[in-house]
Length: 143
Image 1: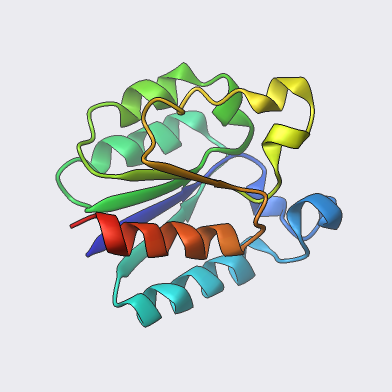
Image 2: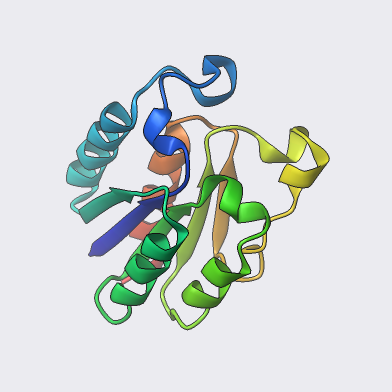
């Protein structure tokens, strides 16, 4: 099973951001964990991160008919980027939304997800383990 993991804006500075909210891992360390979990689950995973919304959207478009499941953490784009919603909407595969912090317990503006009507599952506030939960979900529900 092929899974694409897309991480959005500012996740490249993990390890520098508030560790109480985001943990202390760098993006490279997070991706290493994701690849390890994928191997254990016998999944083929590709991780990508960008601070360019257009590039994120292009990666969504490029995934049409190529992957069996997707994990997305658009970060701040989650709350307002309808362009990402529209790029994901044509997908017929399970999409899982992940956030390191519990966005439902943070600032009011973070509690809205423009992806909520598209995703099969959401894992928020589990830190890096949210990605493991997402991969487990896809292993059981995709393909």
